[in-house]
Image (tube, rainbow, N blue to C red; front, side, top):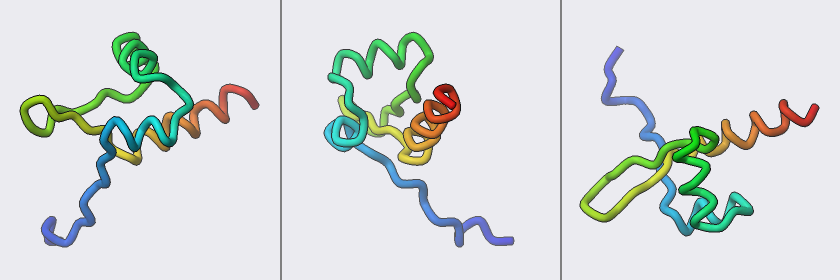
Length: 67
C-alpha cells in the first residue's frame, strides 16, 4: 500500500481549539502540562498546533467519564 495516498491529519491552531473547547488559553496550557489535554506540536518557530482527531478523542473521553 502506498503511504502517499493517506489523508493528512487536520491540525488546529490555538484560536480554533478555543472555539471548540470552553477553556481559556492558560487553562489549555495548564491541562496540557498536567497531561489532561492533548499536547500541541511545534510546527514552526513560535507556532504550535493540535491534531484535530486528538482534541476530538479528548472530548469523547469526557463523555465516557460522565457516563
